Image (cartoon, rainbow, N blue to C red; front, side, top):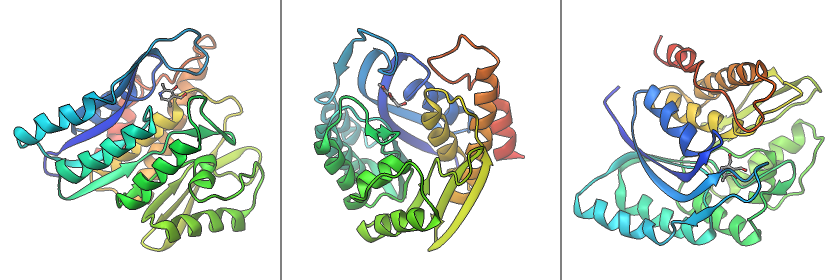
Length: 279
Ligand code: PXL
């Protein structure tokens, strides 16, 4: 593969093993030059820590992009994660328009909700802005979980569901403009979960083991390893499988340490991800 410079846009949670502190090392391990655009700086992530600081960087985003344009810096892919405000989403759309190389890939993890609920700072305004990023900006791939997918296509969220519910979700996303869809956290039995990939008009399902106890940050580990594999020439389905297997190994590593409640121990198993991509 040709050497690629990509851009990832998400927050820096200084402590907490999520967003940029996960994406940057994973993408680097996948051999990608990774430029970053921090959407905000938080002392920790927001799930379980109390009294965290939050510095919004929305107004920096267009200034940074103007400098990149003056320097003629371009990216062969843009991968977005947790975005701190709906106003940021407008800046991201502009950055994609001005700083992506022709034929570049836009990969959007809508990172805004889980378990049927929006993350605390977000409202329906954020959902509407995220729809625009996913559908109007021509995202090549979106990686929602079921909660995010239901919000993006205004469909009722269901905790228990069957294949026809999942199919309808994906069909509605496609109707709104989604191209390749990687729908995560889809399980039809109590001890399994998996990922449904809709690629080239075809549905495929990768089913795998589900641990009862999850870890905070697995969504970011999953999306980053997916992007790493995909940009190294894997199909979306192959990348989805590689990312699922890697994320499971990270969860196993994390479970070895009962006190590690705030993030995913993804570091020690990075060589396994590299092997899966480059072998
Ligand atoms: O992992 C998603 C995420 C990213 N960044 C921040 C978060 C969360 C989820 O809670 O709080 C700041």
